[in-house]
Amino acid sequence: MSQHVSVVAPRAASLGAALTATLAAMGWSTERSYDLSGVVGACCQLLTVLVVEDDDGSVPETIGLLTTTPRVCIGSSRALPLYLALAERGSTVLNRDAPFAILIHLVDEALRENSPRPGSAPVDTTPLRDRIIEADALARLTPQELATLKSLMEGATASEIATRSFRSLNTVRSQIRAVLCKLSVSSQTAATALAERVGGVAPVHHGRARFTNIGDVR
Image (tube, rainbow, N blue to C red; front, side, top):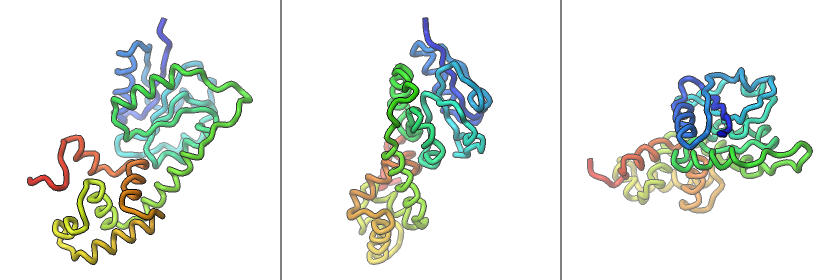
């Protein structure tokens, strides 16, 4: 007999529909809920997968009222501060920017795990706290600095960035130094790795989905 899973996600979150359908295809008995009423202030008897953001990244204020612990929470780096308390209570927190084929298997794996027992050792949320710090640092980049970081993530050199953006090489190099300083890293490789961990650099992900890159002729 398949276990019942409730996927709680905003109506405008396409990820909620995808999770509901795919989990059902994997053998779970699923239901879709469009608001948090099923998990706020109530003792939820179902396995719950919680997606708080819609496709535009909006987060409902009611997330702060959760008193139960969803088995899985999925969101972007912007939602991580809201998920810390749930992670400490045992929720598995996953990045919504991960490829869906990977994400769905991690959700399935988490649903099959035993939930933490009351009084068990607190869950280490250090990695999530680190991602929050990194996301805050990424948010401090100026639009031009973020564009420069995006180009670095796509494999462009400083001279290539200068040529394509009609900026001087010295200007681009200065912006790269500013990016490294604001992200508290010592190399371009570390900066791009941080951005990959945090997620949310949408143009890069969109390009990869189309098998395109900054060097492609259009």
